[in-house]
Image (cartoon, rainbow, N blue to C red):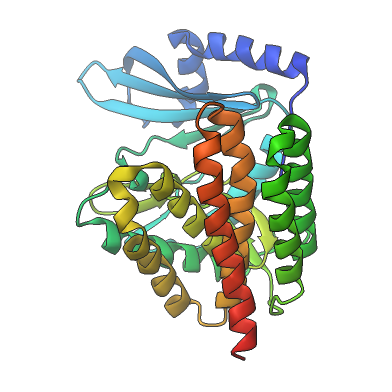
Length: 334
């Protein structure tokens, strides 16, 4: 599982230059030309940048034919050769049948010299943006998709252990304390509680996981739910994905007053459906990884919300403590 990658300055520079090149219609067309249907005669190309990060970016390429037909693709470029591992994993996943109600958005092409993957463009609405009565049912559907992924008989890489995930979280908190010493009194007790809960985890068989599962990674097309972005794939306790998903949803509800009251319904909709589909997954472990993810997101909030973190972080810490207390409570009721 790729925890943290910080590209070198020359990699960032090269990636920015590549982004400028791929905004040029002629360059983008040459990349997607081989994926166009037979007989498709391109007459117009529109490139639209969708997202930019220090180590990757995504550009949408729309190609129109003389007859008015449109084919659309997503070009995802990376700053390093990790893209080859993502491509290999995508190919393995593609060998397995996907359910009619949804599935994974997998790469259809790899351009090694560009460190770039080509995806079909999927039109739809992010699950994170849906807040109406459809939400609980779609969350249950997302849980089924997560279970489908975790049941696949594949081993994408070496196992990531709970101890490794704990150490990565502690290292993140150490960086936070160096950056903001005033957070020490908040994160130190949380790391102690996380270490205590670590010893209470139930043994489990590892599974192929998404690694960054959240409502933002699911796209609702109107009849199918599609899971995006496999950049952080791993091989670990499947409870990690469930805990991560519920923690991300809890964080969203903490910072968005308009949906705070819906947090219990949304989280229960996902977790109940997931555990029903995966009865061998430990609820105690799900709570552990929920707490772990909430602690990790304290760092994220402090970095992204420099003015708001003093109000937001104590709330996030409280939810992390509550999740870790559930780990202890479930142990006591064995």
